Length: 291
Image (cartoon, rainbow, N blue to C red; front, side, top):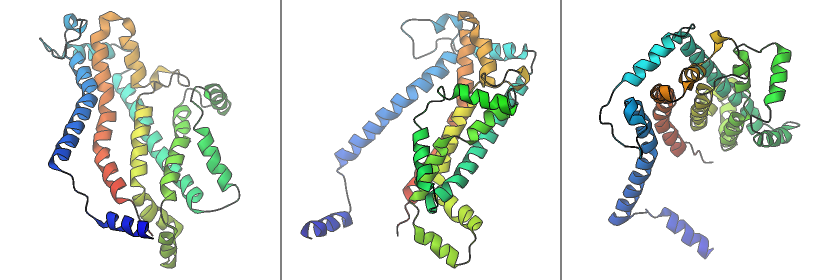
């Protein structure tokens, strides 16, 4: 009891750090931030270097004669493709948007009963979800292709979008967050006459905002960077990673265009992360509802 009373006293006290501790933490965070920014800075730097500076050794972290010629070369090469570049952009945006929204929606719907209801097989389903995370996508490539071929989805958007819907990572993440929501919160809502749909949209989803924002970031990064070469063969349905990969596959002569392409492909995932990360941090800090 004495130890417990001492622990309660310590918890109630306001924790303060010395000025040197604050300076140390600030310096540590600045160093970590610099280390994380260096690869992005170097990628942008490479895209602005003329050809004669690209292969200088050791690599320089500055540009003597910056140029946007690498970007103009990339767009010129893409314009020469017999499929308009706008078509590649549309395919990528469409697959990424529909796949991400569907993944979040279906994962949330499936995670809610698994987290808050006990039914025959619920424990087994939860264990199966964790077990499925052990398998890499390469392991399931052949069975996945056979299923898509049987359904007639080869060379269609469905072959990429539907598997994204069923990713168990999102289901596991959403279920883990929903498990932490207190049951009395749901009981109180039902006593007030709230239906299950109202509970799901107005109570569950706002309180697991950190989960679905994190899931959105992961899903966008995955779908945005896939070339879908396993299931899609029609040039009209190809995505930007495939198109840019074909343009920049000519070796050393197109290294400048390849550097510009790498920067372009980074823009959307980074923008999504920058927009969402503050909400993720804020929501995780405030989402702890205690009984």
